Structures are given as C-alpha cells and as structure tokens.
Length: 377
Length: 146
Ligand SMILES: [Zn+2]
Image (cartoon, rainbow over all chains, first blue to last red; front, side, top):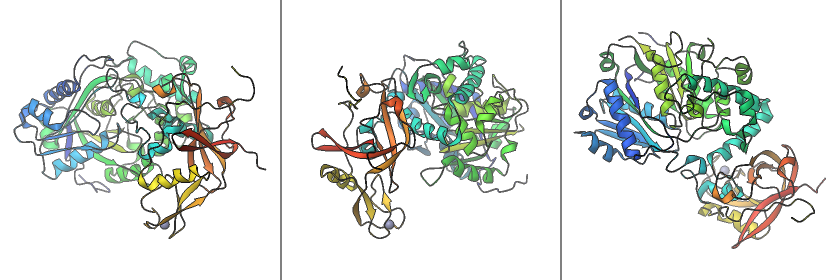
C-alpha cells in the first residue's frame, strides 16, 4: 500500500480489535474497578483475546482503578507496558496514540485502554469535584471569582466565540437535537426514550449562561474499554478491521489545539478532510462540537452546517456524534466516542453511516484525535 | 432588601488564592493597592498568571509593572444554577474576563454592574476589594475615566 505523508510508523499496523462497555446509569451500584473489569472482559471477548494474553494497560489519569488492581483481577501473567496521561477527561485519543506506538515498537502485544467511573453517584465532574484546585495553581486566578467547575471556563470561551463569529445558542440547540435523534436510535443511550426539540433546548434552564441545560453533558456511571493489538491479529476475526490510520495529541501551545493537531493528524494519515465519512467529537459542552468542526478544518461555518441538518447520520454530509455523544448517550470522557468510531468502521452503529472507509474521533477538543480506516479481514 | 444602586455581593465561601511562589508578589502588590503584572527584565514581556520562567526568552528575573487599571470586558458568564456549593444563594452571579489596557487578561467580578447589563467591550477600571484574612482581590467597576 502506498500512502502520502507516512510519518507515524504504526499507521495501519495496529487495530482496535475489540470494544466493550457496561450499561450506562445514574447509580451503577458497583465500584469503579468493577465497571472497568466488566467493560474490559466484554472488550476482550469481542476481540477474541484471553485476559491472560493482555500485556499492556492504559488509563485516564483521573481513573481510580490502578493498573495493578486491574492486572491482578485479569490474571495477567506479565504486564509489560502501562501508563496514564495527565489532564482530565480529554485523553482518550492520546492513549490510543501511545498504545499504538508501543505495540508497533514491540513493547507490548495486546494493550487494553479502560475507563470506569461513577460520574453521577460518585465524584461529579460538573461540580468541580475532580478538577477543583481550591485556590491553588492556576485556580488562584479564577476560582476566587466564581470559575469553579469545567462549565465555567468553557462558557467563558463560548461567549467570546459567539461574539466573534455570530454563532448562536439556536445553532447549539440544532446540534443537540441532531445528537438526540441519534440517541433515540441507540438502546444504550441514557436519552434513548426522550426526544428533544429545538424549542425545548431553548427553553431549558440556564446553567452557566450561555450554557443551557441541554448544552451540558450527562453525568454517568459506567465503564468502557478498547483492545488494541496488531492489525494482523485483528484480521483473524473475519470482519472489517478498525485500523488505526493515524492518532495524535496536542498539549499546551500557541493557537487552537484542534488546528495544531489537525495538521499533524492529516499529514500522518495522508488523507484530506473530505475523505472522512463520520465524525465523533468530544462534547462535554455541545457548543464545542461546532467549534471543533471549524478548528479541525472540516467546515468554515458550522452554524450553517447544522442549520442545513448536515450533522445527521443520514445527511450524506458530515455525520457527527452518531451514538448521541456525551450530551445524549453517556459521559464517558471520550471512551464512548472511541467505541462508536470503531462501530462505524465495523458497520455496527445504531445510526450507521453508509460505506464508512474513514472514521474520525476527537477526544477532547484537539488534545487527542484518531482516524480509523476500514481494513478488510 | 436595601434600595439604591446594585452592588456585587461576593459569596463568602469562594476559595481564596493560595498562590504559588512566583505569584506571591502579585498578591503583595494588591495588598499595597497596586495592580502589578509580572514583567521579564530581560525582554520586557508581561505574563499573567505569573510564571517561573519567561516563555519568550527563558529569563528568570522579573519585576512587577504597575498597570493603569483600565480594562475592557472580553467575555463573561452568568452562573444561574449553583453548580458548586460556594455559589448556593448567590445566583445569578457573573464572572468576567477583562483585557487590561496593557494586554494581559484577568478573571474578575464587576462590583457595580448587574449580570444582565454586562456587555463585551464595556470599559471598566480596577478597584481593590479586601475580602479579609489579608487578601485583596482586583475587582472592576464601570470606568469613570474618559
Ligand atoms: Zn523574557
């Protein structure tokens, strides 16, 4: 196969061989460790991999289940690679990049990326339980004035962007409705049985203005896991193979992280924005879906795109967040987006886009992103 | 409720600054009634929040430049739901990002502008709010300067 811009050696050499998740709820009734273990065993069964074959574990830095606990429960004989990435929820794509590079380098054969969290019944992100700094660090300059939770700082950025570009709350509502339609098709989704209209979005209470209730993600108890291994091994399952065509991350820097990561990611992938068939974007707050679509270079005016219904799964244009996303499926800090991006490659989504060759997944507004390609079994 | 002009009431349970070492002088200047921003003595770059090293020239020597106190509203949010316990009973409450005439951005509150009257671009100026325990915060009011 010839590729342009073949920078990352792991391109198409590593695959997401299996995915798994628990039920999503407001009160799981079990520990975060148990949620991770249930998701991991489901993902391993999906991949056709025995637990003892796992030799790599990676986790969100904020995840409370250590690799040692998980390894002990899975009966792992020789854990050869583990790690986590510092920041909050937004590290899923970066974990995929690290794991793919490690497998390609021969440091591990099967790496499981897991997330298990009681995000509603336990520590609540929306209340700053996880990210609050109690006046320390950068918090010394924001928290004393009432910026206490993730929604505060992001609402500040949203208001400025509305001022600069003319995008409106109605545009945010249109995307929220598009995602709810996807969730209404997805039995796993928290809002599977609850339709949403634009009028209901606009009438929903203000949480932190300009964010209405339905601009904010859910709070969810649940678990999810990915199994990464060589493309050759994944092909043995006899179904379309979600090959990792490209994965990259972007940390602090100058300018939009999404714009910085996009130039790297598409250069590695050797494809163009137009080649992408379906998109998942980290929607802790729905307005950021529109901002990311612009910053990644998919579209110049995301407000117009949603006015035209262009993010619906059956629009034939730029389907976005086809499981319902964080707004309407579950808030699993990007794990559910990675699972959905994988299902789109395998043709197994409940809002399946036709003939997906390339599936794009942002996992934190530019801090990490992945392009999957459908490989033949 | 008292009549008279609207006045910001600061929720008493909001965190107070616990500054890192490189930020201590920012708060010391506020106690002395000055809004001062960290300046690299090698290249003159202003930095806020303060840093250990100048990101432009990697210098580590700084002085503190007193600002004019003039600023403009850059963005703002209004908390309607008490998403954090410190905000219970104090909603709606506005938090504002201002851009100082000299360039740096600060997060702050406006002491004399009700949340529904705040606008991006509004001219404001610094006031020094003693919140107790030897902590003074830089808040802002409508500009009285021409
Ligand atoms: Zn300097």
